[in-house]
Each structure stands twice: as C-alpha cells, then as structure tokens.
Image (cartoon, rainbow, N blue to C red; front, top):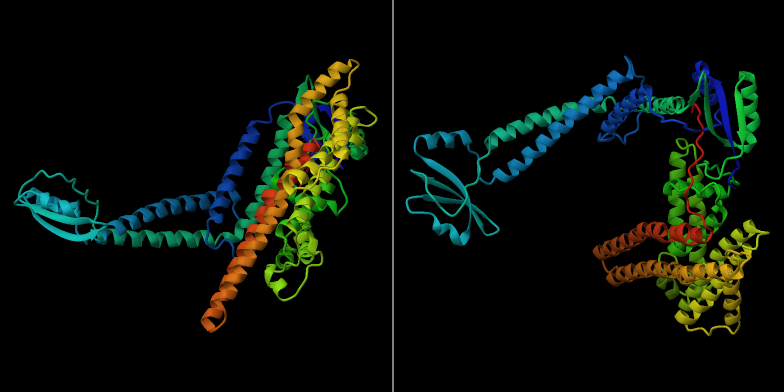
Length: 590
C-alpha cells in the first residue's frame, strides 16, 4: 500500500540551521521540500568535486582490465583530489594519443599501396624542374593525360587506376592530383610505434590504480550525501532570525520526529499535505508483492501519492504473461538455472536479492505453462514422440485467443472494481460498475467478430444497462440533463478504447505462438541435417543451440515490450494510475 504521509515544518534559529539539519539527517525520516533554490557556493564546489570523481571513474571504466576482480581495496594517500586529477590527466592523454594513433593507422592503410616515399623529396624535385604527381583515374580515361607526361600505373582498385606521373613542366589535365601526406610511410609507422608505446605505458599506469576504485566510489557516495545536505541548507527559508525547513515523513514516524524536536527545542508543525503538494511516495507491502520493485526501478515509475499501489495485481498478471510469452518449459528451466548461478555468484555483493526471487517466480511460471501446453525446447518433436500436453485445449488457437480476451476483460475489470471500491459510497462508483459491463460486452464482441462465436442474447441488455450507468453516474448532478451530457462525452471518447484494450491481449497468444514456431523450425532444420557423420552431427547441434539461444534472448525482450505494456498502459489506464509520483527519499547519512 501507499503509506500515508504527514507534512512537517521544523523552525530553528538561523545560527542553529546547520546543526538542526545534521540532526534531521541522523534521524533519516524527513523528505526535504526546498523552499528556495537549492544552489549555493558550497553546493557548486561540491558538484565540481563530484564531476572530477565521475571523470576519474569514467577513465577506469574504459580500462580493458576493469572487469577483473580487484583483490586489494587500497586506500588513497595524499588526498583523493590529487590522485583523481592525475587519473583524469592520464585519461585525457590516452584519448588524445589513441585518436592520433587511429588517424595514423587510417593514413597507413590508405598509403601503403602507393609505396614508401618521402613527400619532401618530391617537393625538392619540383624545385629542380621535375614534377611528380599522384592521380586516381578511371581505367577508360587514363589516355587523356597530355603527351610528354610519363604515366606509371601502380595498382587498380574498383576500376580506378592509381598512378604516378612524371613531367618536366606543369601540365593541365581533367584529373585532380592526390594531395601528398605530410610524412612518408616509414615515418608514419615509426611514429605509430612510438605512440603505441606511450599508450601502453599510460594503460599500465591507469590499470595499476584500479585497486583504488572502491575508495573512489566511497568518496563519490560521501560527496553525493554532502551535496544533498548542503542543498537542504540552501533550500531553507528564513524570516528574521528564524529559519525553517519543510518536508514529508510517514505517519508512523511522527513520534520520533516530535521527540527529537522537543529534545532539541525546535518549533515544529505537523499536518496533512495539501492536495496541490508534491507528496513523495513510500510503498509498503508484504515480501511477496515486493518482488515487483525491481521492475518498477528498472522502468523508473512510481504511482502518484493519490493513486493506487497496483503491485499485487501487476505481479500476478505479469507472472502469468511471462509464462505465456515464453511458453516453453525448457526455456523456463534455463532461466531458472541461470538465475540460480547468478544468485550464488553475486549474492555476497548484492544487498537487495529481490530480483533473483522475482526471476525464480517467472521461470517457474514459464515451466508450468510449458508443461500445460507440452512445450519443451519446441513442441512438435515432443508430440512426435507421444508426449501429451497436460492441458491440450491451450494448443487450440480459438481457445487460446478466447483465454487472452478473458484475461484482458478480467484484469481491466479488476482495475474498475478497485476504483469503484475507493469511490463508494459516492454514486460515481456506479459508473465504474458500468465500465465493467462494457468490458465484458467487449469480450463477447471480440469472440463474435474475431472467433466467429455467437453473440449472447443477454449481451444487448448488458451493454444497454452498462452504458446507462456510465452516462448517468460519470458526473452525477442535480440536473439530469447535465449528467447525461457529461456521460455521453465520456462514452464517446472511451467506448472504442475499451474494445481495443481487451483485444490487445491477444498479443500474448500471437507472440507465444511465434516463439514455439521458431523453436520448431530450428528443430526441424537440425533434424533435417541428420547425424550421418561427425560433421553433420556438429552442424545440427550448432543449429539447435543457435536457434534456441535466439529464442532465449528474444523471449525476455517480448516480455518487456508486451507483458509490461499490458500492465503499465492498458491496466494502469483503467485503474487511473498515471505513474506521476516521486519516490520517498529522506535526508539521511547513508
């Protein structure tokens, strides 16, 4: 659930502002609301230091050795700023030299076919009346050079002759001479060798400081906290000799703040947030439904303070959607084993292990759906060996599509039922009851138009009663005509959307079927190659591994595109969740 918040104002003497905020930081409860611009000279200085640290860490991130395990957590001696500037300077020199070396390699590649010569010698010959030029000429036009000019083709590429001309005087021709390089090929290679040697030394110098990365990260975290603290100071408002800071805290933390305020003799006011306040959101739920938090963090979405916490419904349907979209017990087993390996590898480093348990759940759902449909690294080969699905009806295209429409109507009905419960005892709740009826009418209509089912006799009565509820109770007023006019506008805008939203759930069937088809296709290709000899055995094995690897990569992508969309857009739209909130981030030391 979204935890109710209280708004607090802490009033202190100006001279005690710093100490008061330090006390609030140690308490770690108040989400600061800045009253003034959160900028100051101290904040700007700290930001410059943070920028230096980030540039330093960026240099380490470009190192080829960055992924190797750091065996020693070294301490920075002589101040981190001096060391960070040294690393940044090394990084800049490395970039400059690498760019220059890259240009040299390109020039060498362009000129090595011309041969090794010294441009300055060609210029000296020109002073003595011997003119040497380089040209790139189409093969058919090389005859257009004037008489008396010696032409020596050197090499031909893509129908273009690269040639050298020698003459006793300047001459006109329809071709443009190639601009000579600034240095010869041997000089380029020598310079490249020198630059690569320096680059290697710079790389070594950077890599031998990699063990300082943990210390730099600690300094970065400290700086970010200091910036947050000084922003809070800059954001305080003052009146005479008094200063005050405002913010938000959970309703059950008021006692702790009040106790600290009394001890420190602060003035304080605690009340309810106003409707126009940008109240931060703190979500508390049981450990099972907390499994959705990694997805929310990945998408960077937070419901508004006055909206619904849809984590329970999101998790249940997202898990089901994952199982349907992956649709293969073999793939689910691979995801499970991969998650198990990552869990063991990174469990000591990761504080939040929620993501591992989320993928255990999702993998389990894929395994269950694969068993129900008889799919294990494809479907056709299992059927050929006599293995039967636990629920064969799910392999019937019409039944599968009908189930998708049912899921759509069910999930969207839950959204309106939830809204209806929040609106009670207001008459506006009846409008959501009407929308639930519209959704199930859309379900029957989808079955009729797409699957060819008969439209039920009660459908006309259902849609009539549902539309009447929506029209009359969307915005009930004493003047019934105004109520009806308002309701008709809502119906005109939303009626078709309800039908398309229900139908859009058919993507679960389509994408899942595509995954099975890809698996069966690669299996058939591999079986077609056969295993007559060692070579064909290896080739068929490669086809199977490559095909299923492709499906294992595409599967999670389809979940992100389709599974998350159905929850974040379709369901959230009907639940009136706009994801407009901001997370509760109290001022604290760590």
